[in-house]
Every structure is written in structure tokens, then in C-alpha cells.
Amino acid sequence: MNTPDFSYSRGIARVGWDEPPVDLKFDLIRLERRTGEISAELTVKTGVNGSSRIVHRARLNLGSTRSQTEFTNHLARRHQGLDWSELLELAAYKVTEAYRQGPPALLLRDAVEPAVTGWALKPILIASDPVILFGDGGSLKSYTALAFALSLQSGLPLAGGLEPARKFRVAYCDFEWSDWPHKRRLRALCGRGELPEILYVPCQASGPLSHQAERLQGIFEEHRINFAVIDSVALACDGPPEEAASALGFFQALARLQVGSILIAHTNRDGAIDKPFGSAFWHNSARGTWYIRRVRAAGSTGVDVGLYQKKANDGALLEDGIGLHFEFSNGETSITSVDLKGAPSTEAATTAGRMVVLLKRGALTDDQIAGQLGVSASTVRVTLKRHQDRFLRLPGGEIGLVLQ
Image (tube, rainbow, N blue to C red; front, side):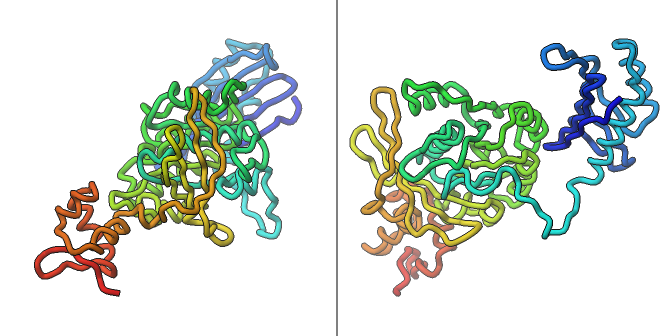
């Protein structure tokens, strides 16, 4: 029996031998904190390539002699001629040690640059870290993210100056829609060309990301995925997205997938555009955040959108936004770069900014402001509270501007 090949990543361990041709896959690895016992779901295959077959699959207590004995007895009945006891004991030991040790400690000076690093789509997407794209409903967030996925998977430029660093294997994890609309959009973006092999993963009915991390680990490992779109994170949370615990739980689950990612998010009810959901936890946990909005209609078949950088992990923020023109014609969608000069400022898109413009004509009541802006009166009051340097409550109850 030769020395086995061993790998452990994305929560999945593999132990394999060339001679005899045996492959042991350990996933859904669990630690029972009360007893310290480690168990895993073990799939045993024999043979190579197309001739391989599953001999047995069951849950195994990795440190239990009795559990290993029962498992090897079952293997021996199904496939004779191998010392299953020795194979399983060695494999269980390797997996147990790897799980307990976790990533090895090292001197920082000895750190090695990973195979996937740097930019994925400069200056927006990072190859191995999460970036958030957030905006109001109808701002083409999902369409833009799909266009990013197309560019990364195919290795082709998205628009002028936006070119992927290399090809990626991309998964689109959909928590809120269905496959056919995305295929229709992908077909429109590709025209009559061949559709790229973007992996679509339906996540709508399987709970938040924290409940699906192990499922996605297996899918990503099988398809060698190294970049993912999460659409959208509000539905992938296991609580209200505005709460810190929701953001922290989401990013802990995301880290287990070991991929670069673009996360589709929204503004908060106040329409604040500095942070996703108005939350410092989302803003701080991502390596980059971008606010996206429609800046203007461009004729009867086109829309211009602007992407504005709100956080850069390394270096200064881009002062100007990135403009993209979506042209919808004859069932096809083309994307080109566009100059954002002359577009309304991002400030004009916020509730606070719109209130400033409105109140320059005179003080108004909460209900009057809400009616003219198309928001709720509670949103008006929250905006007043958050921007007391700009607005004040007058003696008569109306809201006015603070004199500068």
C-alpha cells in the first residue's frame, strides 16, 4: 500500500490511493462539543475514472473503534481483498488531525501568495474577497452582476477598461428568483454566441447561507468554482439584514466557501447610500462596496447606470463613478461605458438630499414631505433624526433647513 494523497479544503477531506485504487471522501464533518468526538459522512469509492463505483456511504465516528469496525465489516462484505481496517484507520487519523489543527500557524514572513489573488475585474471585483454591490430596487443590480459573471467566466471585457484578470469558474447563487429569467438575460447579453458555463445554484428554498454552506462547499468543490454571485444577501441572512448578528453570521458562512464574490444588497429604508443596509457591519466586513443606481434613461431602449465606490480596502476611493450604458434592442442587451458627467449627483438620490431640495422652497410638515417624495412619514422622521445638522423641527411642527 503506497502513501495516500490527502487534501482538506472547503470543509471536505479526501484520502486516496493509486494502489489499491481507493478514494475516501469525508464531508459534513462535525464536532460534538460536549464529548469532543468528531464524525463525518464518509463515501468510499473503488476503481479509477469511469470505472469507479461507490462501495459504501454512511456516517462515521472518526475516533470510535466500534464505529470503524462496523464500517469496515460492511466494506469487506461488499468488496473483498482489501485491508479496509488499515485504510480506514489511517484515513480517519489524517482527517481528525487536520480538522483539529485547522489552518496551520506560520511566520508572517513565510506567507505565500495564493494562486488566486489580486483583481478579478479591476477596479471593482477582487479575486478572492467579497465585494458588495448595493442600491435601490430597479437599479439593475442583478443584471450588472450577471454581466460581471459573464465577463469573468468567458474572460472577455465587460466594457471599455473593465477586463477580467483571467478566466474564473463562476457560480450564480440565487436566493430570490429562478433560473429561466437569468438564462434569458444571459442569452440577451451573449447574443447569438455560445452561452458560457456559469453554474446556476438555486438557493431559494434551502434557508439562509449559514444553513447552506456545507451544501455549497460540496457543489463548489465538485465544479471547481472560484468566484460566486450571491443574489441577494438580504434573503441569504438568518435575521434582519440591518442587525449586526445577521452580517456577522453571513460573512462567517461565506468564508467557508473560499471564493471571491460579489454580493447583491440594498439600501436601507432611509435610502442612505454610504453603506449597504445603512450598516457599518456590512460595510466593514466586505473588502469593497459599490453603490449602483440608474442615473438617466438613454432613449427609449437604453438605461445608464452609475457605480460609485464607497469603500476600498487598499488605496484611495475613485473620485468619479463608473458609468455603464445598457442598450436593450431586438432581444439583445449590449453594455458599453458611458461618461457620467451631467448625471444627477448621488446626493440627489438620497432621501436627505431630496428633502434639502424640497425644503429650499419652504418648511413643510412630515406628511407633506412624505407625499411629495413618495416615502413614508416615518422615513422622514428618521431622516430628520439622523441629519440634525441639516434639518430642524420648527415651533409649529414643520421641518425646515438649518441655516448655513
